Amino acid sequence: MSCPLQRPKPCRLRPSPAFAVVVLAIAAACAVRAGPLEAASPAAHATEVDGRGATAETGLRERLEARARTVPGTDTQYLVGASLQADAIAARRRQDGDEQDTLIVSATPFGAAPSAQRLSVRSSQLDWISRTPLEGGPSVWTRLQANLFGPDGTTRPQLTQAWVRWGDTLLLGKTYSTFMDDAVLPATLDYNGPSGVTFVRQWLARVSLPVGGPVRVDASVEEAQADGSAAPGERVRVSGRASRPDLAARLRVEGERTHAQLAVLSRRLDVEAQTGPEGAPTASAGRRVAGHGVSLSASVPTFGEDTLSGQWVRGDGVGRYFNDGVSATGAVLGTDLRVVPITLAGTTLYYRRVWADGLASTFGASRLRVEGDASLRAPAALRSLTYASANLVRRVAPTVFAGAELQWGEAVAVDGARASTVRAQLSLRWLLF
Image (cartoon, helix red, strand yellow):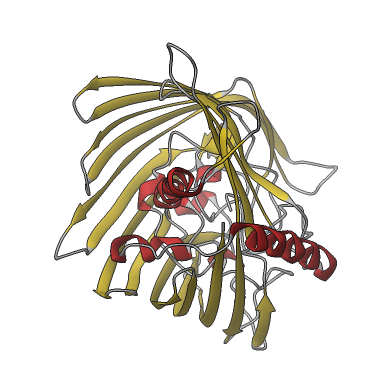
């Protein structure tokens, strides 16, 4: 989701049944026109329960090759598809805020909370991909994707991808950040997924250059956003604005079923911090803060079709690039009254087990924590988040998947207080192309 979160102010998403009906109607029309679809391979089926990440993008391109339509009078091939997902969710403790359809560990209540049960179709999405071959040059690709998870507290069309790409060299538009590794996003039934993995889709311009063999270098100029303003629980009120776009680069080595990636990120923000009562601060400071991060990630085959994947990320002032967050501000006011970016470290490790043709599991854990001097932050501020999940997914028809998932999350505050929750989710996903 890539929302800067903390315990007092979790991201809020409110359901809209009317919009869900519209999306279902559009998807149904796509299904009527598309007809039956061939079964996916055993290795691919576990990733088709999740519409995010590199494996989902690869699957969509394969569908284009197999079932492309052509724009009359042109050489442009295109594919319009959709996926409908229905989720039944039971949580031991209701989360703080209105968001109950996905596990946000930073929203785990530290006090008493009732249980919660939900039915949701908000993980459904619409997809478009096209390819136009150019005479004497590379093909031009376009991509559109939208789902039901609006970021502003309402359920409405949320554009998650919109880009144009010239061959494999230049991409312009909204897509996965170069700093993240979309190939290590685990195929969780939970929409948000692990807290400590990097996950953000934003506007960017990216250049890709092959170095030799399986090695590629990507560099991008990306949309910059401040991490937000502090809410209750933080000792300092922080506001900021980006002084330049974010810069990201990565070196990637990729084989048939394995890959490794090293990514770096550079940010620059103009930040102002205040302490004391609002309107009558006891201290204030302004500073241009430089943020930077590094990420190491990889996936390797193990036994048969099984895969082990993981990511380690560390950085200063890079909180908005994580899937969840322990601070809305990304900075604290140091003892010398200088604004200091918060250092975060995230670790994620997941395993995908293919039990048989059409039957697979994905399980693992993730942790996000603040490093450095905890005394600079309020006792109630979050110190670490831990997320774990395990699922079993069955392909019950060539394009229909049913699964069950158990999720657990724990939030730890600076003062040592702990809050945990357990959720169970049943999901049914139907691919329409």
